[in-house]
Image (cartoon, rainbow, N blue to C red):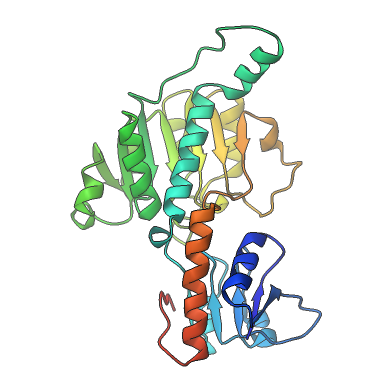
Length: 311
């Protein structure tokens, strides 16, 4: 069976699948070859009607959860199933939540400034801020947001949840970690009480551009911003402007407006911790994800019902 990833990014996924499916041909999609592929793995690529008509895949299977690059209507019209691997099943959510904690602590404790002090042989500076006692809005309380809320609570932070579901639909265990919960229409109310904002909501037509200048300026001055959702959730220019004038004290970015990001993007010259979309890239998460995908490939091979279908 031919399994093709779009692009050369996330190489560990291909390597792990080769271990689990040694008799299958696993590689990257090259449109110039004009070959068919039984399974297309989007990663961060765009799977549109034209690609489907060239590859004639039997399955579009994401290595992870996000599927915003897939044209669902085109897939449905061609009878191509689309599947992902939910973040809560594999340790992906844990990995992303841990990355958020890393960003928050590094920015609050001014890690760059501390490194500078070491280089200049200065002790006892810079003075940092504690995560304990801060109010953090978590935008998106799915698997990632739920795990993050749990970790933040352990640090003694006050967690405000914001999401698309109603309060009545929240998992009781998640609700127990939140000081309050608001639907997305009340986002600014939550932000007006917050020292930090973490974005981990999925990107779709309703959430694109959800965080703009108004939202960023509603946060407490000097607030920390972290995005592990998708770049399109946030207005790029508003983020730069609020970093420039001190409204934001710093930002942690693991996702971008185009991926891979342009290293010359002016945002990287601000107080930003940038990571290359590695929130869920842990050995635990990748091995579990690869096992789920390999199992779905075997189901496809033997004509059995597929799991985690989203279309």
